[in-house]
Length: 139
Image 1 (cartoon, rainbow, N blue to C red):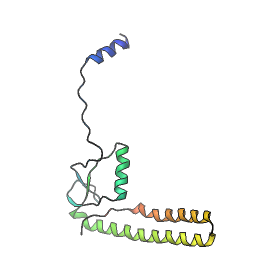
Image 2 (image 1 turned 60 degrees about the horizontal axis):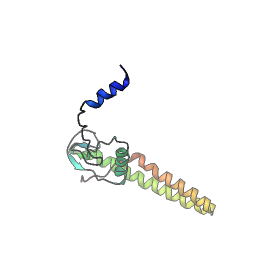
Image 3 (image 1 turned 180 degrees about the vertical axis):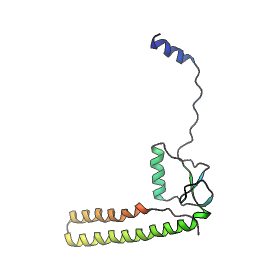
Image 4 (image 1 turned 90 degrees about the horizontal axis):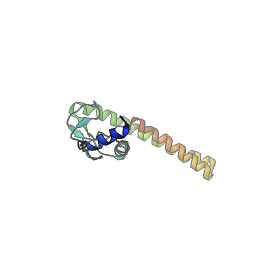
């Protein structure tokens, strides 16, 4: 049998309609705790710039689950501690980055020196994102 006859046979059969995939970016009905990573209900996590950026990348790659992020009642204390740790690191690294920018700019006094100090300062400040933990409505 030749491949052309197979194609004709396949063209004559009715295919099932493909399942409709949900639109990317639509939230699912699942609530996932950001601390224990289990499906639970709780306080809603704020949708900030970093979370929206991560979701946009995942939607582009078609791997987004679009879960609703929450903090369950059992994890509120852990969440507060992790968020406080992130805020401390953000202030520390942000201050260090600003100090680097000021010192290197005063030392070099050139446009290239300012550009290098700006990049180095922003890099140091961005190191705080390695310990990122989102904010929530939990009080």
